[in-house]
Amino acid sequence: MADPFEISFDTVNRILHLRVWGFWSGKEAQRYRDALQATVSSFRNQKWSILADVRLFPVQTLPVRTVHRDLMEYSLGCGAVRWANVVGGLLTRLQIERLASDVCPNISMFGYFSTESEAKKWLLEKEIERSSTEGSRLFQAV
Image (cartoon, rainbow, N blue to C red; front, side, top):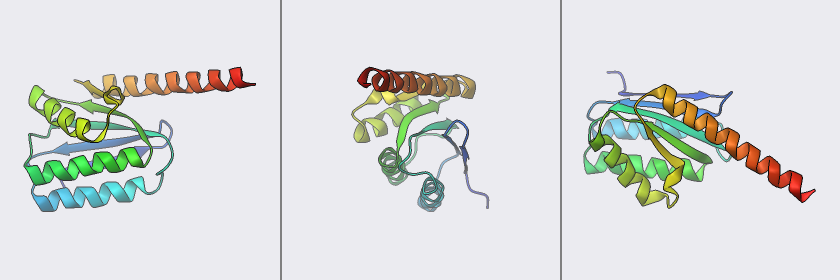
């Protein structure tokens, strides 16, 4: 049986792409956890962003939500600086907002979009803003 998720990393833009779908069992959530942690281990402790397509991911059971919350915390601790979510409806967005509020006091690092292109554009704009700000600070300090 194929896993109900896809994970890939765009090395050029430093974006971890996540696509999840369906209603998960605890075993599927654990396989996702293992796959995500294995992928992140290759670039952890560097700055990167996440683009998560959760349009086909309905509200999950508490054990599955707990795995996702723990992975959010793990990702933030490993260098994730922005998280763009492509959502298909209000319930999915509310589920993600709830999980995010449990692990991250800075909710402005999470964005919600109806298309992947909007989400990627936001991530890339935020990266440019952050790079410009960091460059300005460096220039002023000299």
